Image 1 (cartoon, rainbow, N blue to C red):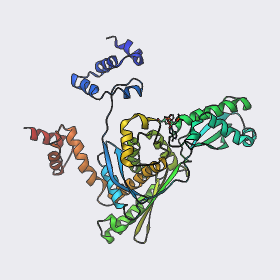
Image 2: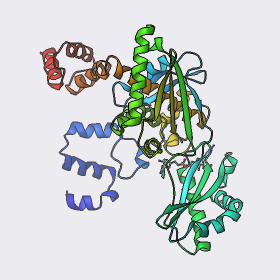
Image 3: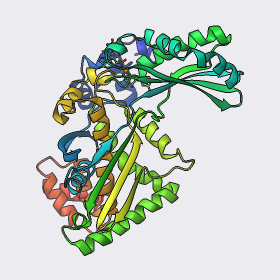
Image 4: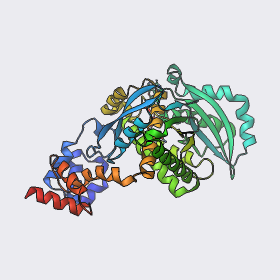
Amino acid sequence: MNLAASLRNFRKLDWDARVAVATELGQLDSSSQQQLLAHFDERDALLIENYLTNYQLPTGLAATIRMNDQDYLVPMVTEEPSVIAAASYGGKMTSTGAGIITSMPTNLLMGQVVFQTVTQAEVSRFVDPQVDALLALANAAHPSILTHGGGAKKIRVRALGEGFVSVDLFVDTGAAMGANMMNGMLEALGHHLQDVLEQHPVMSILTNDGQGSLVTATVTVAVANLAKGNVTAGLQVAKRIVAASDIAQLDVSRATTHNKGIMNGVDAAVVASGNDWRAVEASAHAYAAHSGQYRGLSRWSLQDERLEGVLTMPMHLGLVGGATGSLPLAKINQQISQVASVATLNQLVVAVGLAQNLAALRALVSEGIQQGHMHLQYRNLALVAGATPTQVPQVVDALGQQATADLAAAKRIVNQLNE
Ligand code: NDP
């Protein structure tokens, strides 16, 4: 094979030729090639460029998350061993009464048409008297959004500094995340504004900042629920959770990991729903910094013998569109979680984030994160060390007896079992 020529024309190669290049470069043996083939999917090969195979991640169920007086089984896709166990435990601690209460005042996606070397006054002079006509023009670029119950709702003009001015468009994207429809609407708006302002926009693109789709989830937990019914011990744990929450408001280093813990649950639920998790990640971290300092997204406080938690973050997902329609498992996951509307899906994912956060903080300030975490991590160590599925429980037990439970120890145990 002429490897250099194949690499130059890589996107024109058929699947067999692509595998041949990867095999030669990666020095893959026949068993690796068989695995690539085993995970090949004809439909998914059409989804992306230069398709090789399907990369699989485990899907599990958080059982259960009670939100607004209803219990949900939440599909989660994750490779991290403790995530679903923690979400489920968080769900259990927050399941008294109506459970986690959520609200979402608006669900609007924002996009921007940005101009350079104009003033805000110049752009406003044209935009302000024409708002209705400009909204109609945006809708005309994707008229079916009106039949889906959505449409362009609001326009504003904003000076960004250094001569840049943004015309912000807010759209109700119905049951879709709406990135593609929004970009089409913005381009139509941009072309029109270009004619009247006599300059080409620098760009016409949605923003993932999520300021039009904030979800708030709140919960009240009796402190006894934090320590197996023991009020005194529970109160101690609750006070430490409040301290952990305060630290995440003060210190960026801690806030980063506080939010990573929330995103453990959020991302796993978002991936399972077939949605764009990069968009969700970008909006979450932008919102975490909206005060000017990056802070923890959730806050916990103590009222008498009740721990109160609140998590506000952007969530703008789709029940239709994007990969939600093309990945068969995304549809099955939607069926399992029984979310009837995109508003419910957005709120359920944030409720999972709050439950996940509570479980992580409780473990962190009481027995420590490693106790529960490492036990689950041992399964991963066992698999990496080459244990068969039937050997895994024995290896996990044996690792629990070791002074140092690392990969070398796992390999030693697997070797002993295989002798
Ligand atoms: P699609 O382009 O698949 O569009 C969704 C389509 O679903 C709509 O255009 C509409 O088509 C149809 N639809 C059917 N029922 C409804 C309903 N009830 N409400 C609304 N629409 C409905 O996906 P999106 O526009 O949602 O874009 C999401 C994709 O864009 C994701 O894959 C994402 O990764 C990607 N993306 C993300 C970006 C970002 O986040 N920065 C940037 C660019 C792309 P019709 O009008 O014909 O009925």
